[in-house]
Image (cartoon, rainbow, N blue to C red; front, side):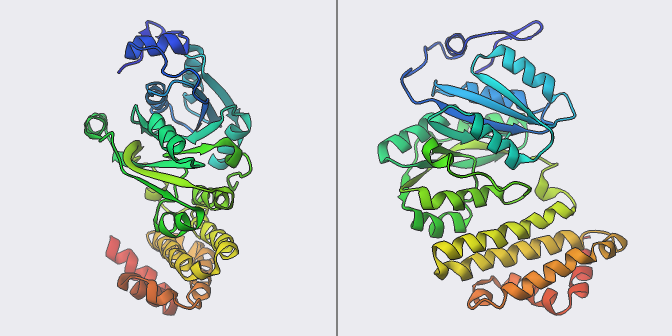
Length: 357
């Protein structure tokens, strides 16, 4: 499915006209609740238009799109303006590079929908994703509905994955306690690929000034407000493997947020279920060691300049390994790495650096 283009760019269409021109259908179920789709973007000139196209291609018709341009320095602003002029369900908010959490919070506050979802500007949605999630939510009475995601890295791969995606899917409905144990602390800690009831989301905000882990903390803080969460194994969200993504970049001080987020998460979980402390601390150890690995990859001279961050990693590891049951839950590889870093941090970083090079 393709968006109609005019000679000077995107053609001005009402949403109903767009739906007719693309799908040959009128909007399905005009009385369906409004879904607010919040899209934070920073320097997304190469991705944003196709992201929005995938949202406009949804079989669920009653949408508002809130694009939050967070201080972009490329042509993202012009792309946003074209999109705003082209579609009467697109709104643009502009911030001054305040971070993804502020951008999402701003979108929440500006949204009007009974339901809310988040999409990153370099990702795309399968055409049926929002309808599937709404149907899951409606049939189970859930406050949150989520689906699986698939990875793609090129236009050819996107088309291949899109065609191969199964539109069915088994459902699993959790209460908040089970979701914490069996989903969030087992890796399903993403805020995207989910649909939320507004009455829940409006009581929580993303942790600002964090560049890693803010979505996991957001979900943790939602859980006390949630009665049911449903997950489907339908793969509806296309996650773009960005070569410039945060996980692949070299260490910067903001990467310490990897540790901060698990420190905060531990406090949240202790307030919900102290029996899960050891499980949370396993993730905490892994976050420390991933951060230490980023530091290890720096040249020796730069690494010496960042000694304060190395010391923080070492101290956090020492502290968290004191928690009963943590060491035994670690994989064999993490036991070796954590033990070596704890005893001889400089040697560990030097060996890691040599190994990776």
